[in-house]
Length: 430
Ligand code: FAD
Image (cartoon, rainbow, N blue to C red; front, top):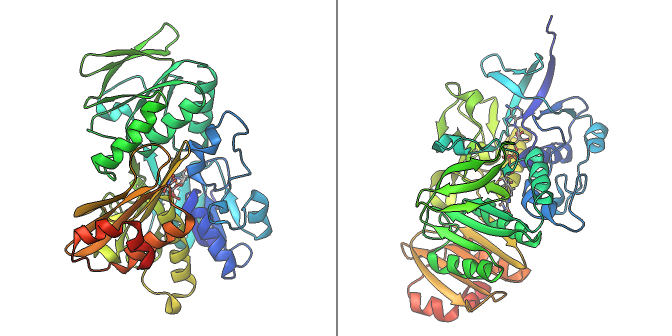
């Protein structure tokens, strides 16, 4: 008979948000045995962004335990021992198969029923598969996605099996761009293929994107834009030998990396919780339509106050901060305000590094030197007479803090020409 276990708090999912939530629980005073984390992954929560960066380096690659949460914010590194010491039950390598929010129970793949008083859903997202776009064969051993440790290990194996070889990277978002850079560093020839006119199309303007594309080209990366993959060719072992593009081209490959977007893992809660923007809709306390269930990280659609609307963000800073805020709201509701989050994205490739704050809406004002790799430049977005977004490549810590602060203040902008003239100085003096 299934006896099951009961906890006060259960975090479903063991990714970035789970790790930061656990730390916040401990900092606020958690009792032994109150909290359980259930994760499909076989390891304790870690800083997922490392998988496309340090993890893929040819020399001294990052490996666990070095990037367990919460190193990303220069906090304590939460190894399995840390969870044990704080009386937190880690149930790893275990998928939850169903949830019943009325009964407040979860059923695991191993057949155990876990009950909770408060559930925090931190299931993140999964990589979209080519099969969802009508292409078959993406389970071949030299076709790689990148979302979790298992994917990252597979990617490292593919890299090591393709010395000096050719890779095609499908998708021009940040996974594609970061993987392409890592492949180049591993001395693999890279062709990037994506349907948009330029890379990072959801965030960057064509002018900023062209700076990065030129830099990538100087490192030997080829770009094939405006088309998509239509099929793979295979050898007798089932390995992919070439990719066929819809525009008729065929490219021989040793390996393929696919980064074509993600879908939030909401499946367990469809029909039980209100969904919005593809995620679980929550209020300013990260609480869902069921008052015992909170959602944080990539799976949560929360009110972004400075935009006056609900958004779902797929970025690590939002995962960290929504996690902390949810735990604050759970443990000390009276002293916890509505979540007031300034969207923040960043990426690091080669020796380049950028940060973006706010919203990329309205008119764009550029500043700085966009002449070539390694320079400092940026852009502001001005909407309805206010500064709403800021981007900076190659800034110092102080300069990044300045654009973050300026964006949060939403200053009125009367004269775009004057903003352009002041450039980065505007943020620094605001
Ligand atoms: P996740 O970290 O994805 O964790 C979700 C967890 O839930 C996983 O452990 C998963 O196995 C588990 N889970 C899901 N369903 C179940 C189930 N039914 N049962 C049990 N467990 C389940 N963001 C940036 O801002 N900057 C970057 O440079 C950056 N780089 C990235 C690089 C890579 C390779 C990837 C994949 C992402 C990157 N991101 C980056 C995005 C960032 O990592 C995510 O926003 C963040 O991980 C979201 O945290 P989360 O806890 O919501 O989800």
